[in-house]
Amino acid sequence: MKKIGTSFFRRESEIVARELLGKILVHRHDRSVLRARIVETEAYVGAHDLACHAAKGRTERTEVMFGTGGCAYVYFIYGMYDMLNIVTGPKNDPQAVLIRACEPLDGWKADLSGPGKLTKAMRITRKLNGCNLTGPLLYLMDDGARVEKIASSARIGVDYSGEWKDALLRFFNPTSKAVSAPRKRLRK
DNA sequence: GCGTCGATGGCA
DNA sequence: GCCATCGACGCG
Image 1 (cartoon, rainbow, N blue to C red):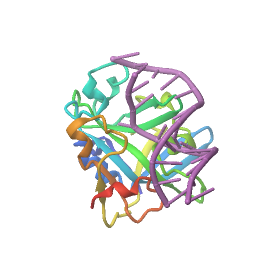
Image 2 (cartoon, rainbow, N blue to C red):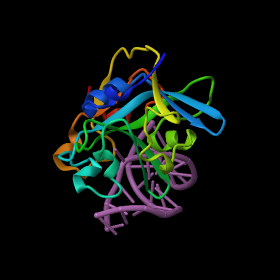
Image 3 (cartoon, rainbow, N blue to C red):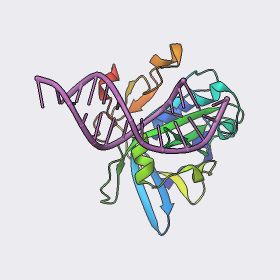
């Protein structure tokens, strides 16, 4: 069981999105520790990716994505949900991986089968935007677990993104029951 | 089991 | 006026 370090995050988001499957997300909150295994991710591959928020330019909201990989990008959407992303790649290359679903660990009973559900249950909010993922609060662990097979599909909810809407940049563990709802759109 | 719809607020 | 969402509701 080892904590994941900076070099892991400084690579392309597609690679990181695949490798994050099976890794453990840890949030130390109040006096408790919330842990969950990642089973579904999406890669947003850069400013040229029209589904990536950074395609609309460098703004206060997207600023974190322009930093070096290894920080959290947490944004608020639909007036009620926070989305957790992991910034990847080098400085000034805005890439990120959206964490879409996890399985709770340590006997914790929670439904983490969706990006909004998982942040709510894990108490992850915009206050963690910009947080360094190699720090003590929010971080990732590798316990050596291997994901047998990785399934892919188009990303969810990005129909507005032209030719990018069909890119196979959603990755998930097909054996997990915690994968978010639109399992159907999988196309191998 | 499906499709549709409304909640709700920050952002450009 | 959009949204990297979710749960409730109506159907039959």
